Image (cartoon, rainbow, N blue to C red; front, side, top):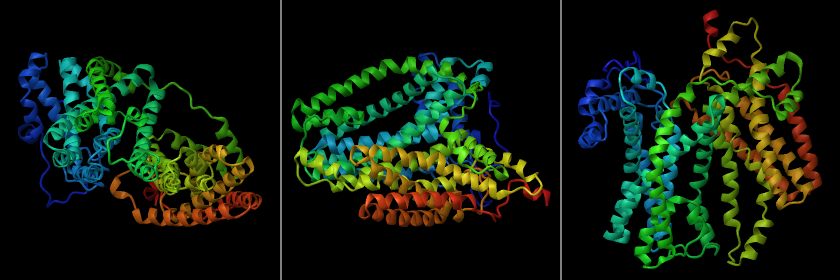
Length: 592
């Protein structure tokens, strides 16, 4: 059983000879605090049919493989990891710092248990969902050890228990890092009884969050297979990250609305409201709210919802975990779905010049971006930040009047809708920068073998794809949504300005970052050049600000003309840009 897994020969971690030697499997199996923690439940696990020696060995080796895998949670510690040391555990201090921010919200609303404790639980839940995307998905959906363990006589119950324990190590670690400080603070702000109740509610929420993630993946695995399954899982992970970006702004938005009369006084007990039912972490504040106010509304209602979530989770977990385990094999199936060429892609491809194989490389870049899940998960949330920023900017401009009619009138006539398409240019800098990364950069060696290969065409079409595939659709969609507040001709003018300036920002950032070949580097968090991206962001902000002033102060017909000139002119400039790029392709030095 000790030979089930093999240690990697090398660690690509940048470690030096002076660093401590990495932990060995024997060290981890003997000294791991988590394994000693599971030893406390040895009798219970044995009684329910788990082979405990096998269980302990599997969990130990899973933790060991996490420690020696340089790609596991490399974003947590910014790529600076010690050999054989788990990056997730070393990065928990970041989550502990976030928990200190949660204490601030608890101190702001000590008389409103729903708002103060709910904010802490909401942040914890979405931080859990974010980490789920980064690490837990790899553990939940790992199919590599299934065949090995089945051929070694490991029962399904033992394998399932080991998989659950492996994930719970990280679930519990994140919970302790993020919720210890808020739980301790609740004793000071609300008293000992309230602190004990909040502790219990938080632990229950942790378990419910885990069941929610299991159930979500189980449902998806049941209905989809092959490449479509992988695409659906990628979309779920992207949606979770995008929602997390929005949720981090939710307390600020609610505070602004409260200050302007939109939500009432948040520093006093509030009755049950629709948003409390929409975001289930608020349900787990019910017992504290009930204790604080001694009233059924809203504490009793939320407590009933919390109990319902607990009961449903108890009955759902077993079947969901069983279904998840049985359907994991679908992830190893090769997809049979053909790559579809949508109408939008075919239309955009016709706008690309025919000469020098530009359409061929535009198609190549489009397909690579379409298939790279890592690129999507790193870039799409950044593109979505623009939509979140629209809400963040809109809220402070709401009138101080608490009358609903006045608030709706101010929202409808707000200047934010005119400049909304420009917010969608925020993520372009990140999208251009991450063009250099790929899961399989060695594939680019093919172009190094072509005599007199035109690198300019490759780079130009990669940059063009960022605008056409990511920025332009978002600008158009957001612009069309403003039809609810603006006349059609004004919306058309705003969209044209947004497209023109978005393409100009794309060209400028492409020029700033043309020293690296697209799709030529394996992503590691420590490689991110914050200086290059910061410069690009500053330029984008200046360009977008100038465009915003033009949209707000110029007549719509003049804005329409300027936008059209900007779009056509920038497209022409792009067609003749990057003619002297000097980056080195992977494998190019082998032919020198």
